[in-house]
Image (cartoon, rainbow, N blue to C red):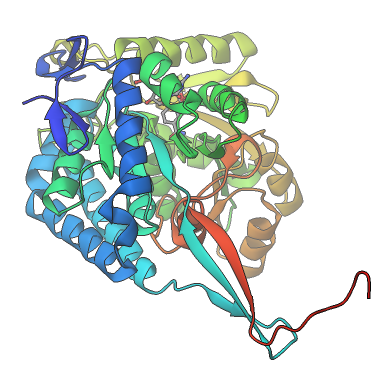
Length: 489
Ligand code: NDP
């Protein structure tokens, strides 16, 4: 079956390009997909433009759009096992993680269905009883939705659900490494009854298809999740046509542990925070910041457990962590280990590929812990996007906040303490978009997600996540107009 979706039809790439999608566990071929180019991107934008400007979609009521979203949620659950498996084959994550992703995005579609129905705009008091003033929220238009490879289904769904709820049309561009669950998502949205042209899909590289979408004068908004450098390039390119831009660019997220925290739980979550999905998580807790008095014991326990993490095939129920996504990405992760060593960080464990011959074909890397880190080290400041933990120490709550904020990113942070006032002090002091107290990682469809500082622009999820895809329009109606006689009385 062809894998580009243009104007309601599955089609091959116009120039006949294809690409092999490989399983990062063993480099086996999972599927050959179509590889589009600029011409395909332009065709997709034209289809989305037509559907927005002239299609029946504009006439859909919010309630009807909500029904569509609810149907997508049902279909995601119907095909849950298949989708989880595709995500595992594509990314290397475990089946359990893939299933959690499906459940999470089901909740996101349900949430935006409810929001679509309950967002009729608002009345404004104009201070004059003869005036009826209303603010309506209308769709922005054609949206380019560009997603990365670490959470292909989840990150694309965080964009598609609110974009549909708001009444936009769109072109989806997943990572060329991991397109399979996006193909599936588009199938489900079509099955749920989205009219032709509302959702279009172009597979291909960021440099060709992605850039063509960002450059197109027919695209009104770009929503992007990915690396900082790509985000910068997109923001700058979007300036030429003054597009709206929403960017989620990752983080370097501190996980702050006080001596009075629940030791067992804090160690357990510190491992989960950094090694979940082999560290390929924008909100991974890659900077552990521990109070001096408990530091030694905490790190010893953490290292002992990190060394017992079972790497393997995501399809195997015994596997706790899969491989990195690609050979190229593993090289990037390895380069950061070299950087950390050269900077004088103390390597406590990992720092190399596993010896197990059963893992030799995959892009595996051992969970790695660096102690003795300082905030000015690159391994502490830059997003390695792999299973690398840096450990720093602090002496009091004030220094914990200072260290936690000593980053150009600001996506997420955790604080562990048994003292509610201390927790509140730190949570308020941190300049990060999400702060977890005695937890690390959960998000809610109802609560905004996004970054301070260089972690991005705008928000996903929650009310603000819908607002990204809306234009506010003020309608001011004078119901008792009379001549003003301002001029030439
Ligand atoms: P990128 O930022 O390059 O890719 C994200 C998406 O953007 C992909 O679909 C990519 O296409 C596309 N893209 C790339 N260049 C352009 C462009 N000029 N215009 C429009 N779209 C473009 O991420 P990488 O995969 O290269 O990863 C690089 C680093 O980014 C990682 O090592 C990690 O540090 C970080 N990252 C952060 C994520 C986050 O959640 N914040 C997620 C993933 C990565 P394609 O790749 O198909 O060519």
